[in-house]
Image 1 (cartoon, rainbow, N blue to C red):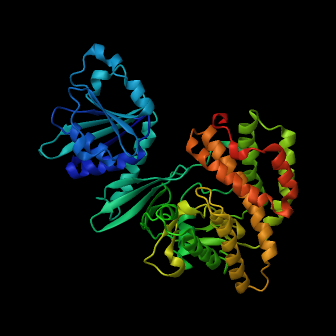
Image 2: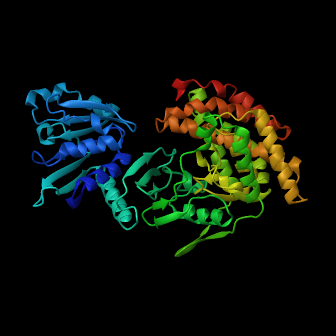
Image 3: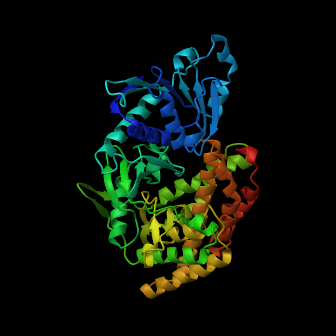
Length: 509
């Protein structure tokens, strides 16, 4: 399988823009083969790509005599090869397979290494034109690169219809999903590009449905667009949407900046100040429930899913399906799994009916931006809310106050929980602080069980072992939640079956 994309009349500016669009999608194991006559700009493109990866524009000499030059860029390790002087017997001594094991390779004169070139690769042929400063490029994606190249071409066509057609992109760290983000940079303004291809989260696991369908995760960008508009109507700082392609999954968004809560806290800004403002946002959301169907300009309304008991149970089962085997070295027996879900079901059936409203679902430090130039609740920028639901309001509060990525002191958690309850009591005489605290503990235990399972799954299934560092913290939060008297039976189960979660052996995953 292959795909071809041709670009005419490419000058140095467009060459750099292409490199900037290619850089965010590169990954370890990728091979880019650059071909063309001497002097057509192969090394110029290589220099642009390495610069856009964070390799340093002034530190990219042509590796003609050394054959290979290794760069540790901000994104990944890149090996730049020039095989113009390659002797046939040298190919096996270069360690190209090792280079791909740790990163990607950019190869000039690839025809001299034709016997080695992998079936999955991106070929870029650069040719001269009648104009000395313009080039013709033909990109050909082989194997898995065919779909990736088609996506890149579609993305470029989308951006060409926006005011950001000439904007180079800078990679931004994303989340654990398939979405990717980049900053579009122009002299007078920036924006954020979201690249979110339509797809489910994993294979079917129950009733022919993938995990994303069972727990109501967004499988395209329509929910993001609908929820963003609803939040902005409520006076909150969700990003404005400048351009969109719902079918292909492209968005150009308002750039809310880089002052993520976690980074602000690391710089010394008090957690009490940041998290206090975030609690105020949740109080504002509690003033009224969301519409059942959210408008989407030019499209059918989006029906906001309910956070129902079956979705909660599927999430909770991640712990018994992924973390329990990591601790015990074998899958959980079916009887044990049924016992676990049987203990959880009555608690979640009750929780799914109580104190309902907005659930943004991932309301925690990586998705909150500090905006000190704004006033009131607008000082908190909101990201990553495409999985929003209609469900128990306590869920977002526990997401915030038991943040999986950083330690929220127990005293601050108690203080802000009391602040929230006081605010809700002022909103409605029917609010019960005692009932809410029970709901808070229940949903905290449910969420933290889910997160422990997700982190174990990311490490075991996807090889993303960095998430294991957060497991002790989440386990401590879980212990806090299970200490609530209403969860006594669950507490005994966890003590019996998962007594050493905070000391998870790294090699078990």
